[in-house]
Image (cartoon, rainbow, N blue to C red):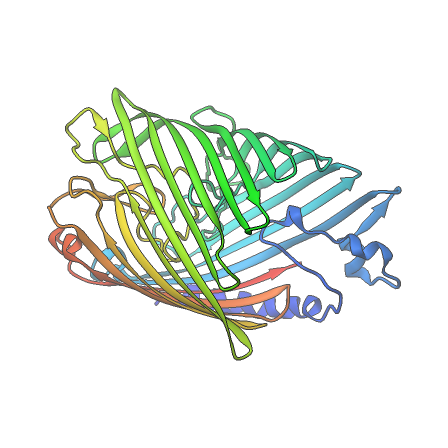
Length: 454
């Protein structure tokens, strides 16, 4: 284990705890979401004898205007033993992410600016999602009159269950999108259209690739609600373009269309479901695209003692390429999925995959306990295995289908709405495909995390 990384984490954690203690004892009903632009501190307008922190969180001006400052700091210690099934590939490192924002609101208008600084200590081979020294994570102007919403600028995006478009919260650097967005709200319908370009991440200050046209997405995402049954239907179309994408079949320009259908909601007070089907077509170089995915998630929730116990059963089939030598690409492209698709170990990504994924979660007021198991197979034995970043991680070198077992557990504790601490570990047991690829060991991953929101 890297002693420098461990020492850095514990020093940061101690400083962080002392800083957080000031906010933890705040008696007022503060609530902090994952995306800070949706936090609402307007209740402070009517609070008497506000302290210094209250005055920073809500600075009124005029009759309907306000200014709010805030941020978050997250530190993570990560450890891998035999990473990527390679014996002796052991490494550990510390990640740190600081975000600071200003939020200006007046009547129907909102201007939101958020700076991000993501750093890393001791990792031998940092990835693009580990480091971005200084950048605007979000910078947008929004108009919202309840019927219409208009947004322009940079934003962290999330649609549906984050299977296809997500801001990627797990890794150290979030995903940034620059573009425009229009929403029309009706009685039980939300219609949305957008155009965005992905921001290319580079490691230093204000050096990211912006509006270069190399990669874009546009489309429409629409939600239809049936409040009497507490069920919803999402229908969406997405057009994705990128100058260069690599699959087992080769590397070429990609223009891909996606048609999706998601049906989700509650069957009764204890049982919920989330199902999704997506079909893709288009062109990869001179090759046609025909790919698809189908997923189903059932969750049963019951009261147990002082908390809630939830049993989840997820399964999905994600197409791979049937024949890399023909004139059709069948590998599914998940576009911009959440980073921790199968846990924070993030070993496999959603392409050419069949998985069965049961899990148990127990929540109390402060504690969360989680354990899960995942079995992975290749959907096509003529295609390789892709990573969390949709990169080709393991080429097709044999005819074996079963990839690996994964067993995981996690625990987290919320000291308050502001301060939380958590640990997660996953163990990957190699399957026939990994063994036949010449990799002869299993992989252990451990992560420890603390986060302060203010």
